[in-house]
Image (tube, rainbow, N blue to C red):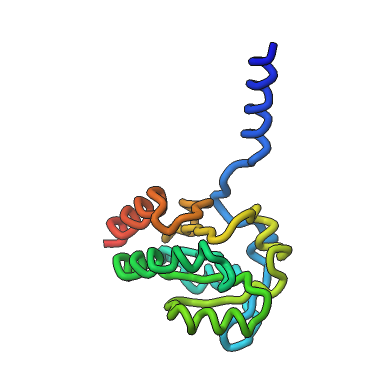
Length: 168
């Protein structure tokens, strides 16, 4: 009987975690971020600007130790996969700390500030529960890696390699 209850608990837990997304929900696409030039930018327009390209989205914050520790791995990916677009979405508490973090850690790529933070429609729609979080969108606009928390995640690297091969 105990094993049956344990089995049911495992099944229930795995079902409640949901499935990985293949496309971004409408709520995520319609969320508005702030660019480094202090302009409001709708997330869907960021994706649209890079249609046909591989996009690696990095959700991070300058106060997040794991994010900072992982940054050299992100830079290594940028060096290796130069054709990929790196989009950084910051969950910093203020625009000032976000901009300081970009400069302090010399982070290259496109940067946006998620002004509503963890409670934003975007974070809600993607079930954000940890940062850093890496999401990869292929050149067809499909999410191919939905939930990676390490920049050297095997799935992320494989997807980038496959994308680099298919774009040649």
